[in-house]
Amino acid sequence: MNGIDYEVVAVDDGSTDNTYNELRGIRDRRVKIIRMNEHRGKCFALHMGISKSSGEIIATIDADGQNDPGDIPGMVKELEKGYDCICGWRYHRKDTMVKRISSKMGNFFNNMFMDLNLHDNNCPVKVFKRHCVARIRYFDNFHRFIPILIKIQGFKIREYKVRHYPRIHGVSKYGIRNRIFGNIKTIFIVKLKHKELIKCN
Image (cartoon, rainbow, N blue to C red):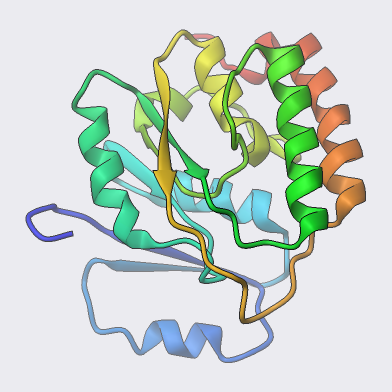
């Protein structure tokens, strides 16, 4: 991030290990720590991180080590080409076959019903301008539909190939059931109620 003025918003989603103490040990004024007293899940944690950030450009990334923050500067530069949102595409995805297949199915339904045309709608690495999400209301699973809700508002989106690594630590909380069936359920909520999910001026 050399030459870029940035902050890091780290959200501790009610962890029971030493995460919070590790974060507190970081002596850097650019690091902002949000600690939740109870586990609320990825969706709410991401919502909190976005709402507590202060920049005009927001980058999101998971903490499981599978994505490379070194991809973010290149994605920021893509915004300068006239785009509002850059979505990561895990081109060589290092996940289990079950995760890859369920993700492909989820992307298929997203593209079919929402006219999105992305290979990897739910890649956790995204870079977007603040005004793209300023009007989006929080709802369960909203993190899966950020690109869709951004596109509905008329903003320009493109993909960017990002690196992906095998998961070494921790266990994913998402299985094939919530990846596919939970995704389909939320698609219809967004399809039918998207006007309610985006605040009016």
